[in-house]
Amino acid sequence: MPAVGNAGMAFSWTLTVPSDPVYWSVQTIDGAHLGSFFPPENVIGSPTGVAEGTALPTEVALGPVTPNPVRHSTRITFALPFPGVVTLDIFDVSGRLMKSLARGFHEAGNHSELWNATDDSGARLPAGVYLARLKTAAETRTLKIVLAR
Image 1 (cartoon, rainbow, N blue to C red):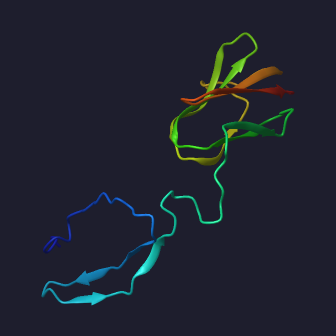
Image 2 (image 1 turned 45 degrees about the horizontal axis):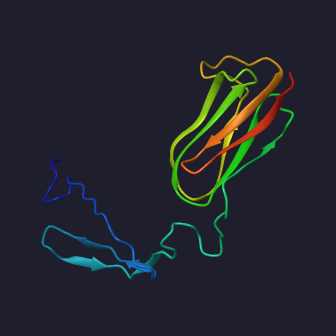
């Protein structure tokens, strides 16, 4: 059945969000242009995108790594006080890049990445000491990870 009216069209909008809560409502319109109204709902309570009552980190942080020593996989946490482009990479002790865990834009807040003790090709890495490095536009943090097989 072919689309009638704008049923086959997609729309998007860019909104500038004020500091007050933002409300929205939805109205469906049929072919006779008769609509049904739904009451407004509070959809954005915080213009930062961070839930109310959740404090942003005050500084860039890397860690903890849990578990450490690692046998099979570990979760690496990091915190960003501001949004921006970050890289989170794993290096061996000679400085060779083994695995890229995160690259690109991240919002301010707490984040984590799972490392399954493999390199970028998917090969299991041997036991040893590895370094997790978090780079932001402002600073770089490094943390030691022990891989025990």
